[in-house]
Amino acid sequence: MPEMIRFAWGTSTLGDFMLAVSDKGLVAAEFSPDHGATEEALHARFPDAEVVNKQQELADCLEKVRQAIEEPAFDPTVALDLRGTPYEIGVWSMLRAIPMGETTTYGALAVKLGTRDAREVTDAIARNPIAVLVPCHRVVKKDGSISGYRWGVKRKRELLRREQNAGLYGH
DNA sequence: GAATTGTCACCAG
DNA sequence: CTGGTGACAATTC
Image (cartoon, rainbow, N blue to C red):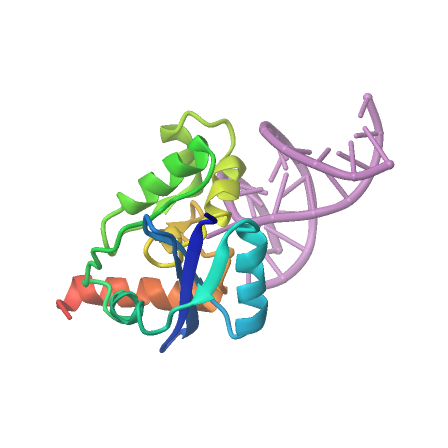
């Protein structure tokens, strides 16, 4: 019996996003304007799984994630099914420990993890498959500037701006 | 902001 | 080993 991966598309003010869940939890959440290519990538990532569109079943989940994108203060209680090397899981766990509205740096994470180079952390973060819910956007360069983001620097800036507004003005 | 230099892990040859 | 490449970092203009 092959594993089943269900996916669905949602829209937000930051663009369309796709969710994919296994029977354990979320395995992917990606921004993309190109539905076809993203679904193909999902097949490629889970070659032995049955990948099916379950728009209705995931409606609740879609709404939660959409709300998390629009309102940073909202904490979606969605199960995550993180898949990666132990090192990557460690990095992603640290990302989820960053409080809303705060940022850290690649270098600081490298030190905490006992890694030699910030780039090793960067690699792991760049492989994060779950946008927003694993807040890879809360990691910036040491001088506070934003250098890159897997789903577009513009989205990263916008996410941070929203979080900072939520912290300063309470809404 | 952009360009430059230093660096380090990783990979292809 | 050599060369190329980065979601880095520090410095400089």
